[in-house]
Image (cartoon, rainbow, N blue to C red; front, side, top):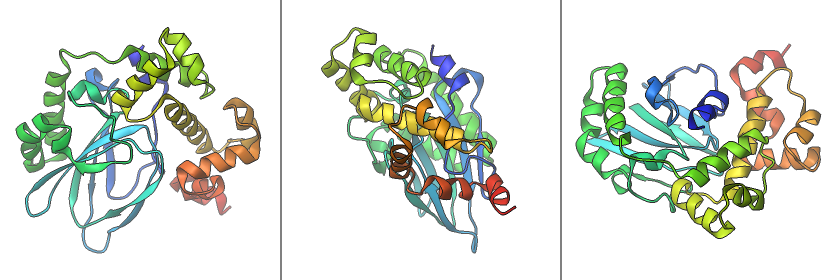
Length: 271
């Protein structure tokens, strides 16, 4: 079931196509159900700028050197923001929110929109391997070291079944899922489901459903044949106004602005 999520639902960023100074690398087969990607960015003088970060249902460990070795942690987001790209080299590990607790013994209950030292949630990673990854000569060596560590951490852990089942159910129903339905589907109380979601993902079941629906909508929206009127019914919005309002709440841009900002659509809009 977990592997089906990876095959059928890949979360995307504000610009999911190839970008200058930023590359994504798929994890090895064994980690694909748990890790969205490894990523690398490098900016030099004159190329720094801002990048829009949208809710992608993921959490990141971000490694870089700046007067010492640093490992930061970015929790799940339910709002967009701009990251400032400075003259540094970054390497990141992007986890799906519903699988990240497989790699740490800590709860994710306070990680919504958090950005802090990775030591707080990933002490073993920070102490054992972070510096070695940062000092590695190439991005491929960084990836190899990260995968070796993550595979070892994964060995004796299991995912919360109620959270996993709820995520799968919500995806299969295009984001049209009530918390009551998810609780019944898992044969647990709504209160128990709320606790499971908060501890595992940092958000409530309702927040997760809304974020999945937003991501599904955005994945459709980056296609050239996207039809907003069809999407209203497909994703269970009340009407077009409701869809557009909800999209902007999460994305920070209107749907038209967001589509135009996507690299391959820029030419399409200008022809």
